[in-house]
Each structure stands twice: as structure tokens, then as C-alpha cells.
Amino acid sequence: MHEPQDTITALATPPGRGGIAVIRISGPQAAVIAEQVSGRVPAPRLATLCDFRDADGQILDTGLALYFPGPASFTGEDILELHGHGGPVVVDLLLQRITGLGARLARPGEFSERAFLNGKIDLVQAEAIADLIDSASETAARSALNAMSGRFSEAIHAIVEDLIAVRAWVEAALDFPEEEVDFLADAALESRLAQLTADLDRLVADTRQGTLLRDGVKVVLLGPPNAGKSSLLNALARTDRAIVSPTPGTTRDTVELTIQLEGLPVHLVDTAGLRSTAEEIEQEGIRRARQAVAAADIALLVLEDGDPADVQSYLADIPRGVLPVILWNKIDLTAGKAGARADADPPAFNVSVMTGEGLDALKRHLKSVMGYQSAGEAPYIARRRHLDAIAAARGHFDQALAAMRDGRSGELIAEDLRLAQQRLGEITGEFTADDLLGRIFADFCIGK
Image 1 (cartoon, rainbow, N blue to C red):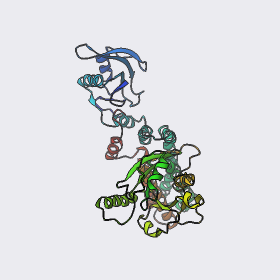
Image 2: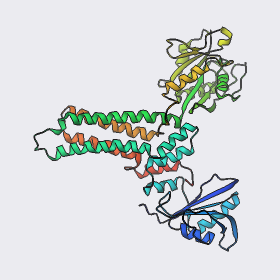
Image 3: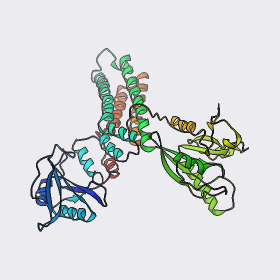
């Protein structure tokens, strides 16, 4: 158990004016603070109505006090919660009283950090708490709950248990070299290593969906002036967010907003029309348009249907790694057929932003190219560090398999397996550097 000597406190509800404010206290002085502030230590896990008093005995507020003795608490330490009225002045007076009794203000995420250090939750579950708070859709919230309940951790632990068994096999072969049987050449061992690699690949597939739910997709709209980019952004967002005008060059700066496509966050960026211009402000807008597309996942090139535009010159503005999609807009004026163009490379769609024709096909394409599936059970939400650790572990599996097939030293195989286990352990926090913990919990809310 992690046993800090200090007691921490923080406002656990959003700051500002509200009906209720919750102040949390965690640490060895929680019971003493309860007695000093409310005149008693409340019965464990029982909401108790009481007055909150200052050092002179004057009433600061009246509310509920809840006491959770450790280790049966969120942090594993003694926890006191004071539920009072949500006025900024009242909250400030209570926090002054609590810090005057020896507590200090908590750092962001310090309550969750103590829960992790005391073994109440693992690192994946701690991160899932922040993901749940930041969820932008119902599916994202369910995915965060999956991770918070330990399902993602269980999947990692199952792979690690199989890996430990394989490591024991290899270590036994190294410890008993006098045995006539070459354990390292056993086909069953190679099969088990291949199965571990397949298990990791399945885990990556399961988590990719959750990563999309967390981070979303960045889609940049680009093309010549008056092709309908701003109208498209408004149509997708179902709001008049961008100014629409027949005058070329209306959009000078990027316009950004986030929409939901069946639970998938899509970050839309409208940009200035790409054209040659001598106007300094419009040139800056075009420069920012190119800068935005460089950071995008998908670039929607919006052109007018029937316009003899040099498509390749526009596609040249899309960097490698960004998926291009061409939209031939204004088919309501050309009587074009809405929907995907057959055998188009890159993918192309006939749409009318004015009437909405073809936009449903575009939305389905946006989801499919990113591997998003709206149906089925909520996936795990994985962070970039999780995916990096899984990729590193898989690389060590590949090296171990190659060493086994080439008949190389068993010590090399054993070392790759050890490193693979260490990288997987970093996900749940079994092998974690202090600086990594600091970066993770610094992104949390204060009071969580």
C-alpha cells in the first residue's frame, strides 16, 4: 500500500454557482478534519446532516457529510466528502477551513493516482475515468465504462498469462541444456508464440474502434472558391456555422466544429478556397488551408459537377497519408445521379449540398474508411500509449519467432519474451516510470 503522510482536498464538482458542491478529502487526517468541521466523525458510508463550522465555531454551511474509512474507499485511504451549497464564496470558506486543518489542495488527478498506487484500480481503469468524463457520445461513454470495469485489463492479463507460460517453457529449456529433447525446436512452442501474436492482433482490432471514439476523425474541406465547402459544413452540422456567399474568397480563416456520425466524433474544418490571388489576407487563408489539410485524416475535395477542373492539381495539395475523397457538388443543377461514382480513384461522390442528395453515402464512406462500425458491443477505448505498447510487444514476438525458426540462441528468445511482457505490463501499470504517471494524471480533472 502507498502510504502518503499528507492529506489532500479538492472541489470535486465544477467550480462556479450551483445547487450542490462536493468537497473531497483523502488521507490520514480525514477523520480529524471531519470531527473539527462537523463536530463528529460520521458513521461509515452513511450520509449525515450536519453543520460545517469555522475555527471559531461559526456555521459556514449546512449539508451532508459522508465518511469512507480506508481501505474500503476509492483511494484506499480514509475519505471524507462534504456536500454543501454550490456558491463560490461558501466553497472557498470551506476549503480554507480544511486546508487550515492541515490538508493541502490536490493536484489534477491525484485522487485517481492514489487509487492506482494503492492497488484499487490499474492504470487502464484510471485513464478510463478521465475518458468517461470526457465522453462526447453514448457509445464513447459505454466504451469508457468497459475499460473502467476492467474488461480491457482482463484482455491484457489473459495474454500476459499465456506469455508467462511460454516464458516458463523457454526458461526451462535454458535451465536444463543436458536434456536430449530440444524444447526450443518444439513445433508446439512455435505455435503458442504464433497464437500470442494473433491474440495481440485481435486486441488491436478491438481497440481501434475505441480509439476512434476517443479521438475522432479530422476531416478538412478544400477546393476552389464557391464550390460549396461552407455549405457542405453547414449541411453536415445542420447549422449555419459558416458564412455562405456567392462572392469568391468569403472564407478567409479556418472554421472548425465537431459533429457526431452515429457516435463517431468528426472534426470538420472549412478552409479558404484554393486559387491564385494577390490579396494578402486571402493568401494567408490559403496558407492556413494547406496547413490544416496536413494535419487531417481525410481531405474532402469539393468541386462543381461539370467543372473542367484540373483535379490532379488539387490532389497535389493533399499530403501523403491523408485520405482524399472527391465531392462533385451541385448535381441539382446538372441532373447528375447522386451517390458514389463507380471505380473512382480516389473515391468520388456526386452530391447536392443544397438538397442533401448523396450526403448519406458520403457519411457511410467516412465511417467505413476509418474502420468504424456503429453496430455491436461497445469497444475498448485505447490511448496512443496502449497501442504503442501493444505494437512493441508484437515486435518482440516477431523477433522471438524469427530467432526460433533460425535456430538462434535461446537467450535471445527469452529476452524478447521478457521485453514483450514488460511492454504489456506498462499498459496496466505493472511496469511504469514515475514520469509517465505524472504525464497521465496531469491531464485529469482536479478533484478526480
